[in-house]
Structure formats: C-alpha cells, structure tokens
Image (cartoon, rainbow, N blue to C red; front, side, top):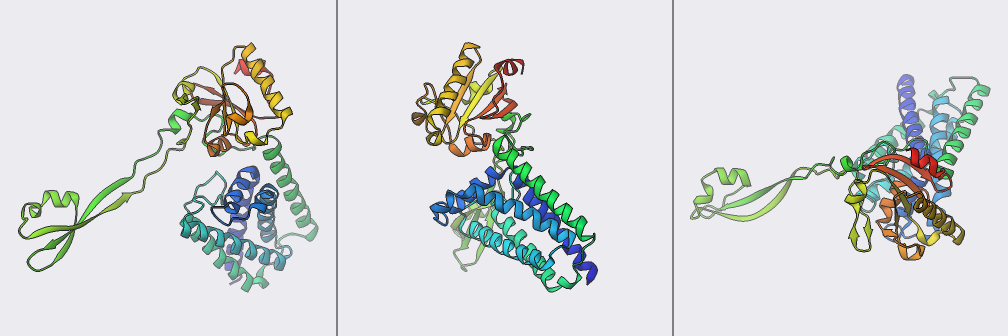
Length: 364
C-alpha cells in the first residue's frame, strides 16, 4: 500500500503542478474564465468579477504549491486537505459546466490543452478519488528530503510562480499556447478544423405486423424497402452524429470596418500592425492619447495598421474597426495590445506598455 500511495502522490502532485503552472503563465486568461463563471449567465456574482484577476493569481499559485508540497511530503495534512478543498471546488465547477453547458472550456490547463466539459469533470472525479485515497493513507506520506531543503524548494517555487505570473500580467506570457502566437499562420488556422459527419437514421414500421426497424439513409437507399410502400413506411427520422466536428483553431477572426469585412485583405498584407483593444471603455484619456500618438507615428512612417476594438465609438479614434471581444482578448491579453502580421503570419506581439520603436517594426 505504501508504494501505491507514493505512485498516487506522484501522479496527483505532477498534475496539479502542470495544471497550475500553465495557468500561472497566463493568469489573465484564467481570470477571463473566472469572469465567465461569475457572470450573469452562470452564477451571477458580479461583485466577484471585479476580483477575478487576484483570485486567478491566488488559485494558480496555490495549485502549483500544493502539488510541490505533496511531492516533497511537507505539511502533509494541510496539503492533502487543501488538495481536497480545491478538487471539490473544481469538480463542482466542471460538473456545472458539463451538465448545464454554461462554460464550454473550464480552462483547467489554460490554453495548453483543451478539454470538453465532460472530460474535465471525469478528470476531476478521478483526481477526487485519488486524493481521498491519499487522505486515508496519509501515514505513508513522508518527506523525501530534509526539512531545510524542502523549505528552500517551496520558497523558490513560490518566487518562480510570482515572477512568471507578473510577466504574464505586466508584459506577455512567457509561453503563448494560443492560436495567435508568434509564428502561427492565421490563414492555415482558419482551415485546420474538420466538419461534423452526420447520418440520417430512419425508423421504419411494418404496416402488416407493426414491426419496427432502424436503418441509416444509405442502408435504406441500397435496400428494396423504400420501394415496398405497401409494407413499410417511415415512422420518423433522427440525425445521428458519426463524428463530431472540430472548429478551426482560428474561427472567429473577423474585422468589420464600417460595415465592410476587411479580414481577408488584412491577412494578405505584406506587413500590417494589428492594434487590439478588448476593453475600449476602460481606457483612460492618457492611454487613448498614447495610442493616438502611436497611430500617428505609424502613418508618418507609412506603416499599415488596423485598429480592432470591442466598441470603437468609445475610443473616438477615426477608422477604428469592430471585432468580437473574446477574439480580441484571445489575440493579446493587453489593453491595448499589438500584433504584427506578414501575409497572415504572426511575426511579433507586444504588450501595450512594451511597444518598440518604429525602426524595429520596419525591420521585421
């Protein structure tokens, strides 16, 4: 039993560290997911939406630390009960998402790994069983290293998480798992999905003995039953999904400029700076002035640009285009943010506070 406990301890610890770390890389992304849960369409707790980012940072760092503590065997009772509390909370969220189809992606592994709601729920149930097992076998959880060494590892893990989270908030995530990462071809991303494969299933009734049988549309056409209208009739029909469709990784990149769809022309530009503003209403007068200055400089240098905003009217900047807010938030976590495209390929991305000199943009 001791060795099984060590194996389970290792699996649970690694999963929590990986799950927490990929969200620590992009705490803003996880805060968007929390905003969905706290929104009117789910739990309707608007006051918590204002604290989504601090809660995101707390959850993701705690998730990493409990995983580290479990592997090290430190403060085992506190660690196991923290794990149990977290997994009960996450299991409730994933069940709610799956059953009511409210939040279709729990964000369990950030943007690194997408799970369906039911897959996320099953994953959490398995983890819940494993953590309950650890709670019952807690006597076998022993530190592998000396207390001082363990303490240093925990402190270094905390510092690493804080640094990585700060980078993801104040600048850009150290690793970008999104379909708009540097190097991605948006035109290819629009075509990498697959259509849903369906088939019609007929329920046929025998008019003589009331027997029923089901046949797919292909089977029905290839048989002689369809011609025997005196014996068989179609009672009803259903659509059977043979293979679920997969949306393209880039399925919502649409830029509407004054009622004109400019998406295709923008993706064909030799070089264009895409300015993203997911929260036009939150930009201060000073931030708007800085953005106008950048746009003015781009015009002077004859560098092409397009401004995508969730609400162009609130920006009061000429020629601003409208796009879906979720798309804009996915492209860049900054408000505003900058992305440079070459023939639809992302060659650079910048946080709003890190926009480089135009000489650097010209050299790209």
